[in-house]
Image (cartoon, rainbow, N blue to C red; front, top):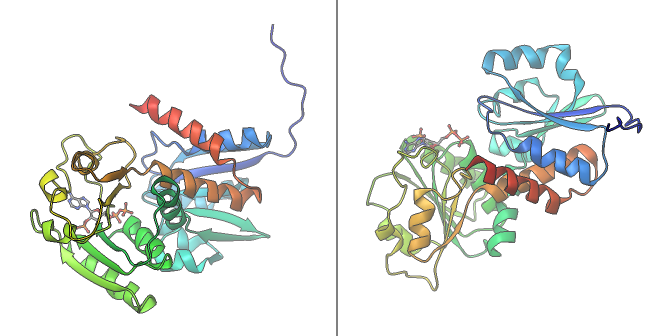
Length: 300
Ligand code: ATR
């Protein structure tokens, strides 16, 4: 009969992701693999599914004090800000917090999505933003993180296309103020109107939720990607969605010869950075990636 381990792990340290819905969250698997690799046996990571009402109750109750740090996902990334002692300039600019850690008795909110986005591009396609043009579809929280990351990486031009034009417009006004050297343009999202823009784009990013459902239309068609290009070589298409691993948008891009990158890398690197903020140790990215990839395979 197997014996229970006799190793006493020390004081339990609890971490969690708070979101709603959370059915298929991959964060627990990824962080547990990291803890295991670094022999942090007293560290555990949970998925806490909390609707907006339960979230407020939880965060106001003593239960939240049991946590040593946490991640936030939809729909709590903005709501949480009111409950924190401090947020980093990064999170302030993006207007969203995806990770909370303790500094003494204070709760600090940060945003590692922007880091995750640019790091994944760097690692997967050796991306450098300097002198480049990016088209961003969507103008929500995820788009803000991508725009901020590209601005900090010194991109030349960003064009934002959104169904609700006013949101794209507001976003460009805000970032123009913070990054006056970068060219910004806001446009309404209309089928067939983007073809010309793709000629001059080095990078095209889908930050909308289009592609999550099987019935969703593609954000761009193959003929959009097949435009004779004004700039040398093929561009890079990124979808922040990682399940399905290939959305219609990425499939079309790939068929037209573009390099396609999904959101798994961004998930990995935002998680790795959260891990480092909590533990003060270098995240074992290789093991975390392996765990993530195997969990992703199980989802499909
Ligand atoms: P996130 O934090 O993931 O960015 P969000 O802030 O709710 O989520 O933003 C969702 C984005 O996806 C928005 O840009 C939204 O467009 P609107 O501003 O017009 O709402 C976009 N989006 C969602 N569903 C869409 C659809 N069916 N077609 C086009 N854009 C869509």
